[in-house]
Length: 485
Ligand code: ADP
Ligand code: MG
Picture (cartoon, rainbow, N blue to C red):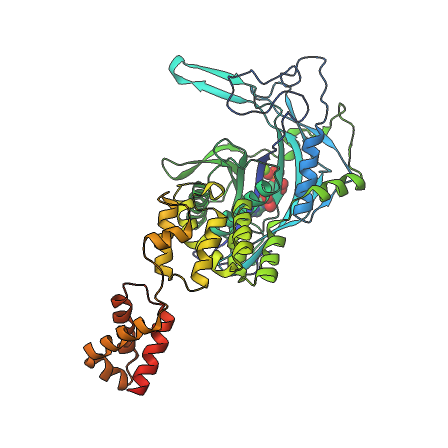
């Protein structure tokens, strides 16, 4: 439920998402064939997946456990009894002539996904999440002018997560998708690999004048990168507004985004549910989930990102922004917690992780879990800043040396590089006296009330100490001397 929405040329944007998450089970949803990606075509499909006569589907318990976990993570109702239905359509990569899905009674009902967009909190309500099987793939081998069918993907378990049309912009759509992606990977039900199609989003987009009934939607299929998602939705919004402004009505349709042209293109007019002739699958009994099973899954759930962020605020006194950022991935959260506990300096640790470390991780240098500066090393480093041994600037040099493998012991590096802050007040006093004597203009300006002149004097003293003086100590001493002079 979004509260505010910005208008584009006087139109309000309305978006609802359907996301197919491929469940991280070893075997398929109704057969024992493996789900591994990238194998030789048709080597991972058994008789059930090929729809040979006489075969029957058997529900994979692990796929159901994944659905329960998602329901628990999103505050949904987990249906004690849900029904599998046949969705009938003809396509070469669907050998049975129907897809087993859930229609009237899905396993997961309701729930919501909340996230921050800037500092505004958004909540998107979910309609449902249902279990279904994936289809195979048609491979078009242009060079021999033939098409082939690969049924390795047939029967791969999917959980399709459907939202209410609560999203109001392309930015919000991407933020929703990122949050959902974070949750499904965090609870371990999906590997989140978008390139391999493990997390595929369909964005239903319409526009309307504020207060008007919902406009006709077009559904952009198979968005498998966050970048394309934003581009595709932005293009689609502009296209629909142009059409309406030119006096054309929007036709409900399924469209594809072409990353090369940056445009969306109609693929087919949209089927209605009636076209699929859904009916309950007589081969599968109703899916029953006991309260005890739900409790067992609850006990196995990891602490969720939202709960963990709240705990970081409460236990470590972090700002909410830091806590939210640090819980973007389980690995980052674990890294932070180890560094915070070992150093007793949560805010300093957070600053380094959100700054220097994230920059390098995001640049693709490494995963945070494999970073050459381990949480234990970072803890040691921020400990040396906190106890006044080194300045921030010196710490950056030590960090660089740790990262590049020049050394692996914080204290030894501080020693070897001569980075210890000057805590000897006698030596510092001498430097300050010299700076005051050498800069009479700045001193006069400071006395005339110019703060900038004071900063210049601090800078001079820091420089004279070759960065080893403690800036706070320089500040205090300088102020005292100038007041006395
Ligand atoms: P279907 O299953 O035929 O695609 P649904 O009614 O289940 O249709 O809706 C699919 C998705 O489209 C949902 O996420 C829903 O919120 C969204 N949706 C429905 N109507 C609109 C609309 N007018 N504009 C944008 N999104 C919509
Ligand atoms: Mg749809």
